[in-house]
Image (cartoon, rainbow, N blue to C red; front, side, top):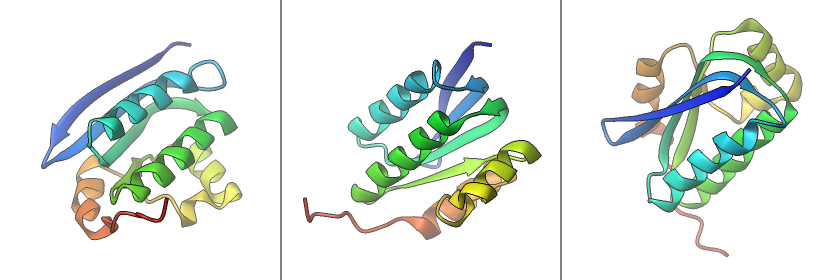
Length: 123
């Protein structure tokens, strides 16, 4: 299955809506979109996975990598997901402890302001 990635902006937050399967073949497409946002100094990001039917370890790696990158820039990355299989994957890997996961985009947007970090200037 192909991957579809689209973007909108609300309240100075980029919402990246993902649909399809995020796997070893399609994860680079998602990574590229998220890297472009950070390069454009858009570091307040919500990734909406509601349309994702499958997410493998490569997709998880993209989310974790982008979370670390935007936090270094003083930003934040939140995920929207209610799919039980994907949520179970987050729980098994412990990512639900470091990656904020929400049931709706509105819920994620409401918590983005609370999660903004100071930029890590140690590099």
